[in-house]
Image 1 (cartoon, rainbow, N blue to C red):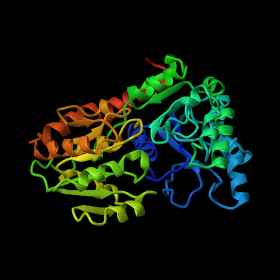
Image 2 (image 1 turned 90 degrees about the vertical axis):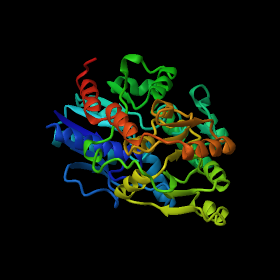
Image 3 (image 1 turned 120 degrees about the horizontal axis):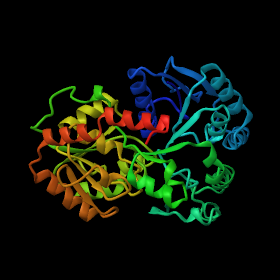
Length: 396
């Protein structure tokens, strides 16, 4: 098949990019011809399969930049031109959308549908039901905009900014679910939890496919799973409020063992300053995927303290495939990955409960090889590929 993958960035920026790029590689290994459409961006991989790019836009720039960004959000002529040309040049049978809002816009779904392609859209976040992506207000889960769209402006939900919140409302109004439904043949949900949110938002169940994220075979079994572990636990992820990192650091500060923190984000400077006195908290900054694998491979356990509805929890999957148990919160799709055989679950935003679970995980003797085998069976690429192929061909 000829499949065109569409994502606003094409480098390992976040979970959406990681999975989009891994899926494209998987399809090529299976013999399909796969192209890529993205936005021009200096950090994008030099991928020879990129068949088209929309011009770059920047919301954080000058007033002229902001105006160009707002036009992009609404589906500007630049994106229409570039994507129409990519469709004509590549002639895909399937267009697989990933994260397309804002920097590309859902106009790509309309154009792909009108071109006669089957349109499959993976839900990496909640943008289709929440103007701010996250279903959060003041740090708590929120779905008020399903019934009262103006709440995003009334509460300054987008970056605590009135202009940004107005732009988010305009985008949500133009690209509303009812308008987009005829253009999309299948919505791929990485978790049952996400599927329930779409169903509650009146997305027909006939269009919803649950396909968990996967771990590529070339990242499985690269080295034997270590039964003996180093004396540390770790966190790998973005340093931002919804990830629960502050709660994690509160818990770690009262524990006697080392926590290694890998990642960067808007809270980095503040957290470094506030926890500078904790010599057993090590800051690794942003590290490479190979370094992430090594970090997880030797950790006693990893921690995913999320305080938002994680769509799936890619970091937990990476940990489990390394044979490393996970201490995590009961949020979103995380409980679909973590049970008592491979980790511990606690309530979000509770430093006491998290500290207790981390101490239990430290003291417990885990069967690391069994954790890795179970994860590889549940989240290997073959099952993902077959389910995705069914979505591409309208098979049940």
